[in-house]
Amino acid sequence: MDRTFFELQEILKEPGCFLCRLEEAHTRKFFETLFYEFVTDWGVRERIRSGGFCKTHAQKLFALRPSILGIGIVYQDLLHRYLLGETPQTESCLVCKDWKERHAHITHLLATRLEELAPFWGEETFVCLHHLAQFSEPLRTRLENATRKALERIARNLSSFLEKFDYHQSGLPIEPQEARSWQEAMEFFTGGLMGNKKS
Ligand SMILES: [Zn+2]
Ligand SMILES: [Zn+2]
Image (tube, rainbow, N blue to C red; front, side, top):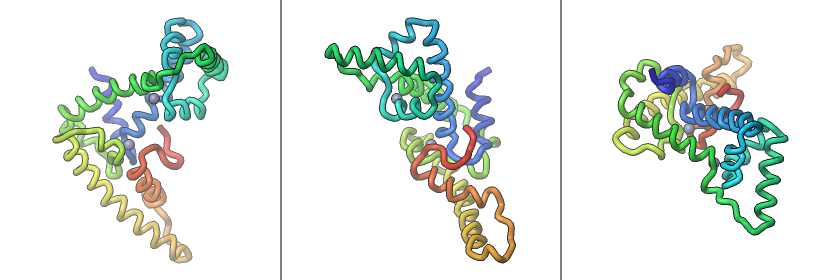
């Protein structure tokens, strides 16, 4: 049983870029576990001290704040080391490293079991431009084709949303998929979760 495979089945049903969702959930969980272990495990502290975090993950850490005390201690360590003349190697960001491994596993599952996953692919499920660029052929084209179908639907939803928005007085109700269509379009071009979606 592959937990990631079942996770993919679930996440593919949700509208938006499923890789953005998986990456966001991964970062959140990684920080929670890291700072939980941080209290009891000195090895973890050493691992963080060696590199700190890249800009993206430092920003995520700032926003998520799994432990103010833990973050304070990590950055105290990094400051002391810097003052002693050590430059942090941010290319060795622990979150990036861990996501890279998970991404390789997800890629393997998509490349080998896409037919099994296809029935779970939702009507507004796509891969954003940022994540598409990380796949190589022939998987990329297969994901692009599924993405195009979703984008065509999103474009239709967006058109009817704008129509109803223009003639709001007509009293036609705006459907949820129409209301989120502009956010999905933004997410496709820039990646990252938009609006009030849950990760
Ligand atoms: Zn994405
Ligand atoms: Zn990183």
